[in-house]
Every structure is written in C-alpha cells, then in structure tokens.
Length: 418
Ligand SMILES: Cc1cc2nc3c(=O)[nH]c(=O)nc-3n(C[C@H](O)[C@H](O)[C@H](O)COP(=O)(O)OP(=O)(O)OC[C@H]3O[C@@H](n4cnc5c(N)ncnc54)[C@H](O)[C@@H]3O)c2cc1C
Image (tube, rainbow, N blue to C red; front, side, top):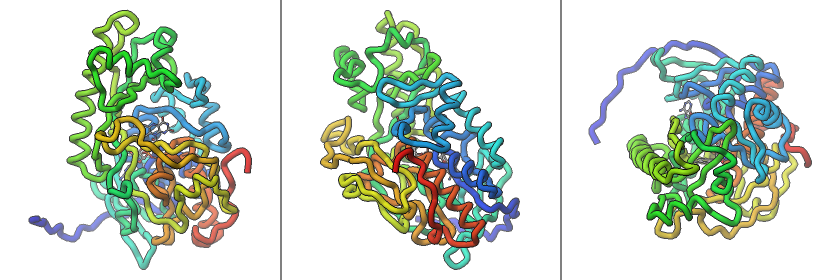
C-alpha cells in the first residue's frame, strides 16, 4: 500500500491531570466521577457531544444486571427513576436517553470532573512502559494531555491499542458478535403495545407479527423497549461480520442498519391500529457495536470462572448476567448462539482492570481482560459502571499513595453482598 509520511508535528500540551479517562460511556462516567470524588484532578475525554455511550449515543438506555450493585450505579438508578426512568417486570432499569444525558453531566460537574466533548484520542506518547501523554483531535486540532494515570473506557480499547498493548478480538474463529443500529420511536401507547415489548418471555409477539406479513428481520428476535415517558427503542437488525476498528466496515453496517430500521417502522405504521402513529424520532449516533478489543490485563476473566461462579479476594463487583452471544454467523441462526456455559454469579477481579503491559494504564467496561464468552456476560452496563467506579477509585488511590495500580490493595467491592 502506498504510504504517506507525516512530518514531525509540534503539539501543544494543553493540560496536566492526575487521571485522564478516555471514553464517557457507563464505565468512563463512573471512573471519572469516582476518581474525582477521591480528590484527584480528572479529565474525561469523549468523542461524542454527550456522555452515556450505549445509553445515549447508542440509543439503548436499558441497564441489565444492576440490582445487586451499590455505589454510583445505585445513585444513577435513584436519579433516573425520578426523571422518567422505570424498573421493568424483568428487573431491568431504563430511562429515556435525554434526561440521562443531563443527569450524567450534572453528576460529573458536581464531582469536579472536567469534561471535554467532540474529542477523540488518537495517539499516545510513551516513556519506557508508561504513558506520559495522550494526543487528541478535535475542532481545536491536535492537543496533548499529560496525566499520572490513564483509564481506557473507549469500549473498543482504543487507548490501549495506541499504547501498543496486546489484545484479543472476536471469538476463536475471529468472528465478532453482530452489531445493531437502534431506532428511537415514539407515537405508541405503552399499555396498548404491552404484549409486544421486550423482554419477550414465552412469546416473541413482534417477531410473529413481522413474519406473518413476510418481514424477516436480520435480527431474529426484533425487540421493542419502552424506556419511559412514551420513548421507545427498536432493535430489529443485526450487522454481521462487523469490525469495530474498521471505519469502512462500520459505515457499511450503519447504511444497512438504517435502511432496514426505516423499513421496519414504515411496515408497523402501515398496519394501522395501535401502530398508526408510530414514528422514527431518531437513531443511535454510533452503531451499536457489541465488542471491540479486549486488552491484556494482569488477570483474565474466562468462561470457566463464569461457569464455576468464581470468587476473588480482590473482587471489584459481582456479575450475575448470563452468557449472551448474539450469533456471529447467520447461517447458524440469527438470534443468540447456542451456549454451553451456564453462569453462576461471579467476581470481576481488580487485576482484569489493570494493564499487564503499561504500568499506569487501567481499563474498565467492555475492553477489560477476558475471553469471548465471558465478555458476552460482563459487558452489560450494570457491570460496566462498577468496573469504572473501581478503576477510578483504584487509580486515585495509586496516585495518592504513589504506588502502581498493580500494587493497589483493597479497592472497594461495588456489589451489595460479598
Ligand atoms: C446493540 C447493543 C445492545 C445492548 N443492549 C444492552 C442492554 O440492553 N443492557 C445493557 O446493560 N447492556 C447492553 N449492551 C452492552 C453494553 O452496551 C456495553 O457493553 C456497554 O456499553 C459497555 O460500557 P462501556 O462504557 O465499556 O462502553 P460504551 O458504552 O461503548 O462507551 C464507550 C465510550 O467511549 C467513547 N469513545 C470510543 N472511542 C473513543 C476515542 N477514541 N476517543 C474518545 N472517546 C471514545 C464512545 O463514544 C463512548 O461514549 C448492548 C450493546 C449493544 C451494542
């Protein structure tokens, strides 16, 4: 391939912090807030114009595995319920995306976090095996930022990869779970469409309705979620062979996903009756990518740990969600892949959040150290938040005590029962 050689650039160092968190999704918000509450100076860098990741720019504000958690997730739950959120029969927590954006910003600003939106992490500067600066790109151009600790909460492990860390990607055959491009719909009466709402229980009514009219969505379990206040989410497509770190591939999946989503909403509207006012009010700003890089940590969460309900002395939270691999190969089914592992509630160890290769790098959320099957369980947002809270707390302790993150002992446990 022809290559273009960039001349050496002088990049201004715009700030210096104790801790920089890259990515403001569920994990990143909690990491930044927890670190700031420990007294650290913290900057949160987010490529979008809001925090929340999958909850907001991903149009899926639906929190799985939150019930047994305390700490920041419990605070978010309490606030969300006052601002139009709901707890559903299944136990899941939801909140319309817009109130959630404001709620998260208020928490972060009150906690003293500096938020920088519209800014992507694009480079790092290393000294020995330590990150000294990150480089960002935004409307302000290229800027550099120094910190004592960095936390990768980009979901895709962008920061770790830029720092040259090893990672795993996809399953044993290299395939990843499919993406979904989610629509925000309104114009429905939550009571009238009750039987069509996810989770489906015994009867996938929406699927039956669509298939009885000759519509076969690429996601074999099309799902309508009521987030609250008459705001719904429609997840009805799968983008197979998606690659979270290939912009052309992501573009193709967005184009396919949007087209299919519009077709599905138009179809439902054409049915009239309870569907006659359905409208597509918006769609996710970012394609819903279920997995990216899984960075190499000091410890590794594998499927045997899930199956045996593994406990750890250095646990940061207890995950209780099942294995949930959306089938990577549509020729073998287009819903959930057949899984042999039955999870028992298991611990996430501190070491899975600490990079094995860069001594001042931590990670939280879906890019922590674990295998393909384990990731399909711990990736949910009810676990991303306590992981972020642990990473932020531990990073701040390591700064205060002037020790490496790998030497930190006694990071709190952000689940109710140990
Ligand atoms: C379609 C879909 C449906 C899902 N459904 C559910 C569900 O119902 N319930 C549930 O609990 N979980 C669900 N999940 C899983 C869950 O979304 C994720 O695993 C979870 O979001 C992990 O949180 P995170 O903070 O690690 O990542 P994310 O939510 O992905 O947040 C990462 C953040 O980093 C930012 N970022 C990325 N790269 C950069 C960069 N280079 N520079 C700066 N910022 C960057 C992103 O913009 C984003 O805000 C779903 C996932 C998908 C894709």
